[in-house]
Length: 190
Image 1 (cartoon, rainbow, N blue to C red):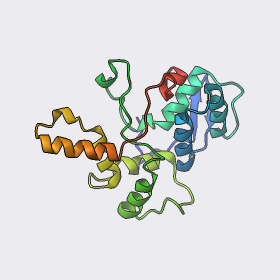
Image 2: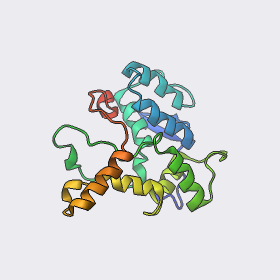
Image 3: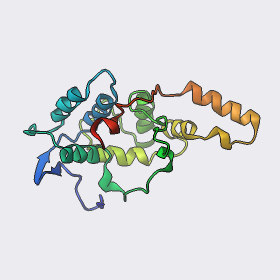
Image 4: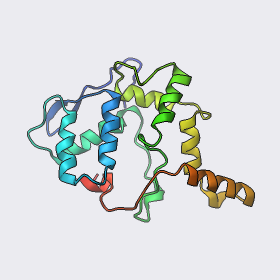
């Protein structure tokens, strides 16, 4: 875990005993997420495209390198490792509660409203700084509201009228999702 108050955001990832310089702008890592979620791309295509996120493409892509890339994407060094999630104990991933593409207009508007940052005209922002700001959006932001509604377990709501209201909202803002074998984590065995 790093302390971003006095430690710089990383410009490299470590794998296979080497340091690899990576592109760090937030736009590129949102593209990365879109690419990984694109079911029309094969695993081989994704691995090939993944090398474009390096300043100099690696000679070969290993499991350790893939894990390092995904660790950088998840900004793992910003927070302690979370405990294992019981939602995946049945072997089926839960539907996503947020999507960079589907929710892009809310990201742009929330950053402008709460931070005064116009993401559409920003010259550069490190991916991890973007992640810090995104995760700190207040509960009344559109992004956080959408996450809250999508993650609500309607089975826990006792009031029938409230349960129906939440279900209508969940359907209206649902992210297209299919349970497929080639989901991001399964693609690379991560």
